[in-house]
Length: 173
Image (cartoon, rainbow, N blue to C red; front, top):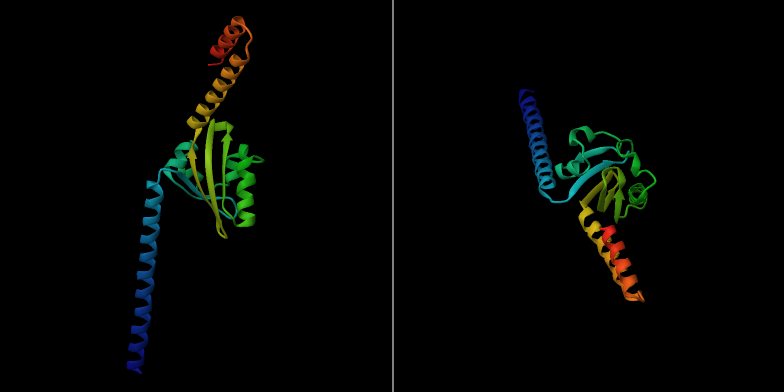
């Protein structure tokens, strides 16, 4: 009887130690993963299946002008209501419904922020990587206006028309 007790106790202790080692390995893996997410240049956040933030890296928090700890557990649509009905909501919901990743560019007016977004769905939620492309979009708009100016100057039929178009273009800049 005593031998059986010692064997059962040893077996139980062995399993308890294995569980503790596995738990510590999981925690270390999670910590390494979070450190990796903090080092990437892109902004990153994760949402659960109920659209609640489960992770927000520092870059995402800075671009979203929020404290990452305040977003954890918060509903994405309540925190960013201007995204409802826009490309963000449409694409995120499509990704979750189809379980296929989506990539898109969109403008979030309340933050005056253009973003390039890639969202990866899973059964647990959505992992979203995004980058601030506001400067690039502004440069593109300026180039488009300049091209329009050049085209209108080429169509101008007099020096006065050219001068008028140049003055209009200067006022736009």
